[in-house]
Amino acid sequence: MTTTVHGLDGIRAQAGADLGRTGWLEIAQPRVDTFADATDDHQWIHVDTERAKAGPFGATIAHGYLTLSLLIPLWTELLQVEGVSMAVNYGLNKVRFPSPVKVGARIRAHGRVASVEDVRGGVEVVADLTVEIEGAGKPACVAQAVYRFLA
Image (cartoon, rainbow, N blue to C red; front, side):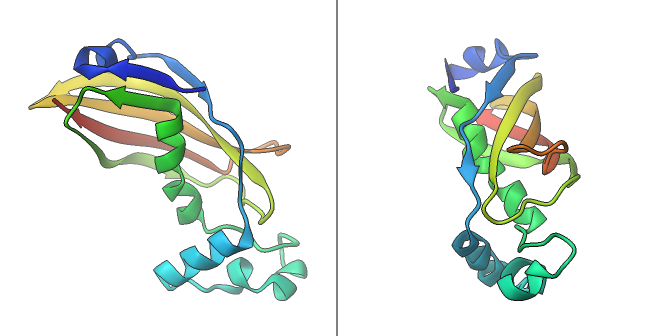
């Protein structure tokens, strides 16, 4: 489900809004391998499918930071903002990885606009985001992300 708003006033009107959930996204081994190459994190639990079968998770798992980085496209699936000059990932207030994402699993994000505050030239949005794993009892990632939208 995508919420589309226009301009800074449209964003301000979303304060406190539950943005719902994104569609499902499958985490495939090639994505994990590419992330490993990009970050030089080739730990066997991420890239060695044979060894990982006998490991603690029974399969390779996505890097926590890969899961976190996927909040970027998942966030834009939750909220589309038109009529602004720029959107910036401003930072994170809190991030936790309660459960690993096994390769082959599907994830989606649930989002809520925790707050919207005016800042010089625009607004700052604090979003509570949860990355859910299909069929799992615990989320993969819980984060409070900060975005800035400039006029």
